[in-house]
Image 1 (cartoon, rainbow, N blue to C red):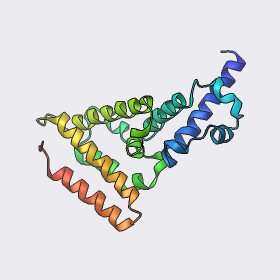
Image 2: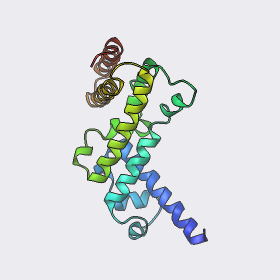
Image 3: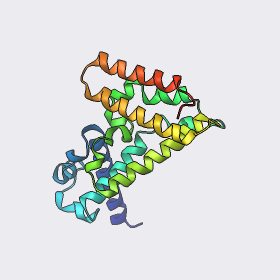
Length: 191
């Protein structure tokens, strides 16, 4: 790779990292090309040298935010045996996960607004949702209807995290997370 290609690749990385962080913390609509390029230390005019459109960049940044947000979940599956459901649920419903938007689950961050995004972003969200459903189904083991139950569990988790972030009341947020955890773990085998 020539020097200019290496520089271009490094610039693209800076743009995507800045966009992924901004998406995680402030949502899809918060990403303005001019501000993003300034945050990445580049000129606005250089944007189209890296991406065909804002939608393309948003989709790639959303994918990166999804991957970054799973730094606590994915390692749980590195061993010979998948984690138990309780361990997995505790990672997602951890109050620190709720409070730290920049390093949290991308599905939880984007669920409410992805319906307004373009098909590229919706595809990224759907892919990550399906990957997480597979992980939860693995944690359920041989449970009957594991995939259907995993879909319900992930949907409950995303809703709980989204609501805990939205209510602005720490006591209510704690109740939302705790009650959702209890409901998921109590209703094993339901669906």
